[in-house]
Each structure stands twice: as structure tokens, then as C-alpha cells.
Length: 147
Image (cartoon, rainbow, N blue to C red; front, top):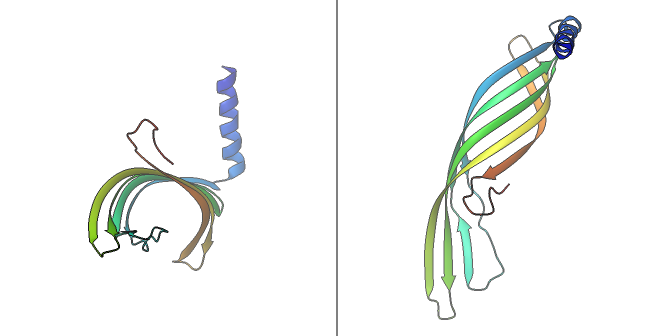
């Protein structure tokens, strides 16, 4: 009972002192990204590898908590990445063997950021935010998920 009364007093204090300055916005995010990495160079004389262009799709849930013009955003995503890698082996007599490997990788990401809104005019608003992103895959090995 004491805990319930404490929570109700805390909610009342936030509502009375916030004066409608707190706001909460849930949302859904969907992103499509193109991955075009540079060729991977290595130190082996007869072996090279390179990644080809790939794409990823992710669907997530975003939560934004505003206080006046400052906000905190938390975003959780589930995604799917498809990309290919090309391996080239060669030897001294110019026998060249090439092999391409296509892979699909489900992954998760979790990011959190702190930002500020700037009202430019009646129609336009600028959002500036800085944050961190954690990405991991759903690895089925004994080691578990790699982050």
C-alpha cells in the first residue's frame, strides 16, 4: 500500500511540475540499406577476397520521450542482411580459382540516443541527435550470439 501511494505521489508531482512539457511518442521504423563495402585487401600473396554489394532490411519499434525540446530515443530492430563475398586463389603459374559465397544473416540492433529539436519555422523542424548503436547476430553455434 505504501508503494502504491508513493507511485501515485510521484506521478502527481511529474504531472503538476511538468506542465505538459513531457511527451511520449511510440512508433514503428522500417529501413532498407544498401551495403557497398570496399574491397578487402590482405597480406597473402596468392589470395584475395572482396565483398559485393548487399542490402539489409529491418523493422523496429522506436520510443521517444520528450522534455521541452530535449528528447531521448530508444530503438530496437530485427533485420535481415544479404550479401556476397568473392574469394580468388591464384598460384605462380597463373591458375586462378574464383568462388563466390552468398549469405543471409538475421541480426538485431538496439540503439539509444539523446537529442534536441529546433523549430526552424512554422512548417520545418530540425532534429539533432547523438547516440550509440549495438548490433548482434543470431549465431547458432555453441558460443551464442556475437555482438
